[in-house]
Amino acid sequence: MAGKDDDFVVTPWEVSGKVDYDRLIELFGTERIDKKLRARIYRLAGEKHILLERELFFSHRDLKWVFDEYEKGNKFFLYTGRGPSGSVHIGHLVPWMFTKWLQDRFDTPLYFQLTNDEKFWFNPELSIDQVKQFTYDNALDVIAVGFEPEKTYLINDIEHIDILYEIGVQVARKITFSTAKAAFGFENSMNIGGIWWPALQAVPAFLHSWIYGTKTPCVIPCAIDQDPYWRVTRDVAERLGYYKPASIQNKFVPGLQEGGKMSASDPMSAVLTTDKPKLARKKVMNAFTGGRATAKEQRELGANPDICSVFKYYQFIFMPDDNELNKIEQQCRSGEILCGECKQILASRMIDFLEKHQAAREEAKERVHEFSAARLRDEIKR
Image 1 (cartoon, helix red, strand yellow):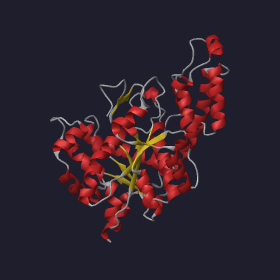
Image 2: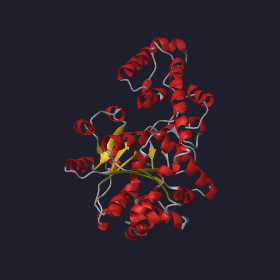
Image 3: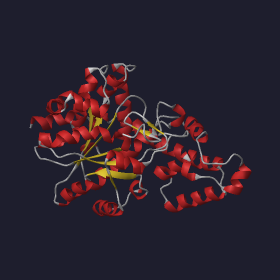
Image 4: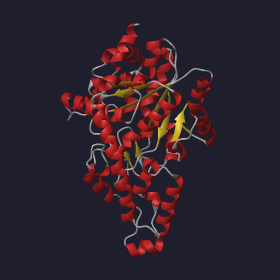
């Protein structure tokens, strides 16, 4: 994890400062996604993807091996998740949208873990009823992304513990307290639920192989700050007879304020999926940019899109056309466009995106049961 010796902090619990992704690759021990690997993914998927093209998914573990297996006919499955401790924001959707693309292009099952037990253990301010409600609310956002119900299993940890427990106890016996303490920074004040938690988080990486009796590769799409969670999982995998899970990591969607990633704990830094249009517009119009102190100065000297949160939102999902993106970058640097006008463009696109997502989210209320991992109980009995 990046911390004291760097000008930025990246841990599973905190992201701050100007993140150096080259340094993160070095510190975390992941591998950069190079042109050759991108070309291979495109060939196998049959199309390109904007998040790979713009190097927003930028590093991985063992993807080359996964695709070696895939070309031999050994298909992989997907695993990702969400800790339901609050509302979902735009930043959470980015890895989910890429996960959907992988599911569609490679025809893979997805195990999506809603870790309500984790949030209850790690956040003493949350009641059990609150985490259950957040679990339901967050599930609506997952479904609204458009995953295939026949191939998607939403795992509610508290509700579906019977599905997880057998593998969980096997994982737990392989992880010493000293290992968990070193990996997650546990102190003696940590409740024993939190200490047990890493064993449960490992389970979905092995679940498909266990249920169907065939050793199957697993790929975990996630933001880079979550990578440390999977190191312990990889350490125990082969000792339990499973493949080590592979992963693919994305950069952070920035917060609308200066520094750090988007965070639901900072209301003005994050556009929530449930925000009303007026509030979403207000957040965008108050965003941090790379503009100059005055309009006159910006017309003369131009602005800096490299540090502008608005421009970064365009890069992620709100300006998929490269020609349009290049044009607005040139207009920004030359001073042809001012920040207010640029924000108006993003605000309009943000509102359009939210309206469509919220409509899909409303429809999801009638479909939650279609995605429930409870269906796996019948498969386990077989």
